[in-house]
Image (cartoon, rainbow, N blue to C red; front, side, top):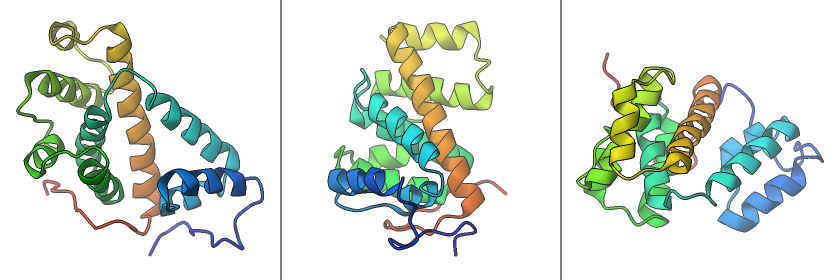
Length: 182
């Protein structure tokens, strides 16, 4: 059971209702994460704005979903693993093998592999990546804008991982569990 309540429709703050309605219109459902963040309409608005903006960037939906999986695995976020496994399969049409590989920061595609490696370097070093890590992602064909988008996608996913890990948000997608080392 979620440690932070997930408001019902009757409990949802008026300021959050149009935001949640827009999410429902776009996705056909209103995920528990969105309902939960709706406790703070300004936080929900900020999250949705950043999430929407990243979707308009240079990175493909396939790469963004792979980054989300790598970050969720790193942070042990079962909610986000479940969501992004579902989206990776059904929206981005990523193969089972590539979904599994992404969780470990891997890909058969060299360019994707470089992006995932860089994303994990951002996480592991808390943004203090080496010159070599930055050079490697650039060498793989990522320009300045794309490098920044990788960093922003990592950050956006850390945000949702932390919210869900603190709240222990009830998972409303087919469940996937992190393979955390003990």
